[in-house]
Amino acid sequence: MYNCFINFAVLSLACKFFAKNIHIFVTVKEILKKYWGYESFRPKQQEIIEAALAGKDVLGILPTGGGKSLCFQIPALMKDGIAIVVTPLISLMKDQVQNLASKGIRALAVHSGMTFHEIDAALDNARFGGYRFLYLSPERLGTEIFVSRLKNMEVTYIVVDEAHCISQWGYDFRPDYLSIASVREYVPSASVIALTATATRKVADDIMEKLAFREPLVYSSGFERPNLSYSVVRKENKAGALLSLCTMDEGSGIVYVRERKAARETASFLVSQGVSADFYHAGISKQERDARQDAWKRGDVRIMVATNAFGMGIDKPDVRFVCHLDVPESIESYYQEAGRAGRDGLPAAAVMLWNDSDVKRLEAVYRTSFPPLDYVRDIYQKVFIYLGLAYEEGMGQTRCFDIVDFSRHFRLNAAMAYSAVKYIGTAGYWSVTDEIDNPTRIMFSVDRDALYNIQLSDKRMDTFLKALMRTWPGLFSHLVSIDEEYLARLTLDSVHGVKSKLLYLSRNRILVYVPRKRSPLIHFSNERLTPGNLCLSEADYQKRKLAYRERMDAVLEYVRAGENGACGCRSIMLSEYFGQDGVRPCGICDLCRSDASICT
Image (cartoon, rainbow, N blue to C red; front, side, top):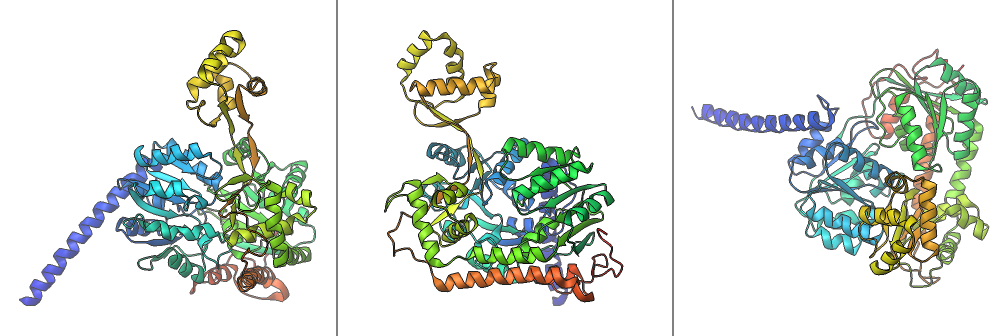
């Protein structure tokens, strides 16, 4: 009788728990259907979402195209308050905010490309404006203006995108990510959702430790891609092999190259051979990048030849092949880029073309990536000199920083100088953002009465000035970002005409005019130090150098696995690199197929 009572009690609790989870599941499914139109989840999405809803800290490791954003967007929509999303990619941040807005979901972003007043207004909106998501670049986390507002925000989740950036053992360490744990002190009830596409076991453990997980919890969908055939082919004539691949497969494809010049030249070669192709890299304008990306997504362009600036956040399921013309510098980046093929589950190919020159290039990159520390210290001082900042100046400032112009100015090797700048960033002294569009900004330098007199004396400016004041409030108090194309449509003018009027007003000291500029930004976490006070650990430097060498050697081992008739499986090699055991041979990679004939 006692046992029956116990069993009934256990059954009753189990039923209640099951009913509760069914309720959550149905609610989550309703949101998934309402906003994204999907009927079901991809592997491990539901587990990550339910862990987050239960208030647990959770690390999700999902492949490229595995739907990482849904893992935090759905839980955040189910709770009152705002989710803080930390991501290092400003361009991707802007795209996600726009995508959410298109679904009627209120989201905003704060990053280094904004003025103080824009940041101030955005953080006020985050507190009082009914927004559900606040996207932040990591260097914003420790600023006084953010921390002071954070204390009064109702934060539901702290989301860490590209979470491998917090690990010193990851391939893209960002020291600004280390301040996330301190953010938790101000919002102790908010749980952490950390997401990445690639993390070894060592990196995963480091992520959870650095983010102060209350209990370790990892969900990984696994690293096998059963529909994706990996092939690595030695070819001296890469252009011919690529053309064969493009002609063999009529579907959509991505070709990855290392340099911008190679992207342009390879696309031109394919077009000259009758293949529909275009190129993409961070050096072309945002409008042009968006136009080319949209044309490729629609299928108007078959092949996109690109640097690694292409592919983040793009959900195109029917990519039939990804080809690497240059050997990547890490397995992590290779896996992410190759994984953009075959997201629809249909057969797809990931092909890497290589020869001895790739090995020599990787060795050269390794040497330039770790210049002597004395050289690094010298670069530190040169950056401040270049930007005109004296000793004890610069802290908290954000400046445009063109590494090519900087290197030309001091007659430096650009690759080595950039490596030094990046390493100083890993030490926490500054951070360099990706290349972004800085919009046109204006501010009136006269008061309203003076402006009224100008309007009366010059009828041509009357409509123009009224349109400015009606459309962008605050022009008399601070610099405001404006859209010249929108203003041109509003005033029935051309973009050139709008720019001419702004220039005229600027020359006559009626307004301050800061034209649109595309440039990377450098944000200074500390003031400029005098020589001898820059602390760069030799031991830490050597550890990073060793970790880089290990990642490079892993790539070379993967590339050379097919030499001398060696047997094995590419899928097993990739999975074991990320710590996943027990993977069965894929049967479709070049190593599994004894009669492989890719790109012959």
